[in-house]
Length: 202
Image (cartoon, rainbow, N blue to C red; front, side):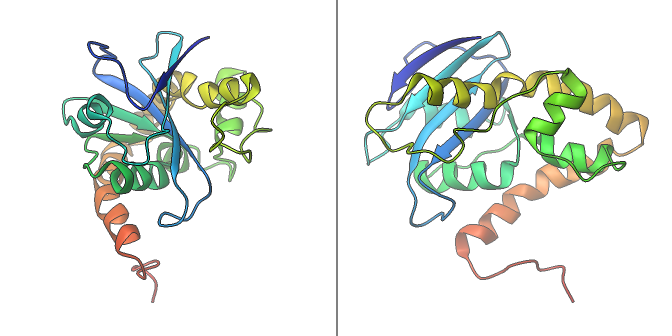
């Protein structure tokens, strides 16, 4: 796995293809309080592009263009949060989503373990560390350990999608998964508006 670190935006002319794995690191999980610090992207070619967001204005035209491009499928793990923070921070929509966590919950009904670490261990035989999940992502200089951790969060998503999609097809749940992926834009809008919780509760 190779890592390329960029400051504030993706470079001009970088083509990551039509299926891009994306993850984010923030100062916390509060959409309004905690800022977006890092955006990780991979085309599945063994390279992770990490964009460190040091500019508080989030003036990142190349990143915004990719995130908002409906022709580019974006693979996330737990897309609900990542899409919300990207849309809130960058002020762009994020269409064409595939979420490996949703796919796992619909396909792997024999378990309640749907975290990225569990998926990588079972489906890929890879044990990833989550040691640096809670660390200071707002630092001006990120450690090599932080960069490696962040890169691993996108490095395996293409391979996980390739494992989960056939399982969804086999179990007759691909159409249901696609409906859930499409509903994410509405779920994220409710999250950004605030106060809705689970609208399907009694």
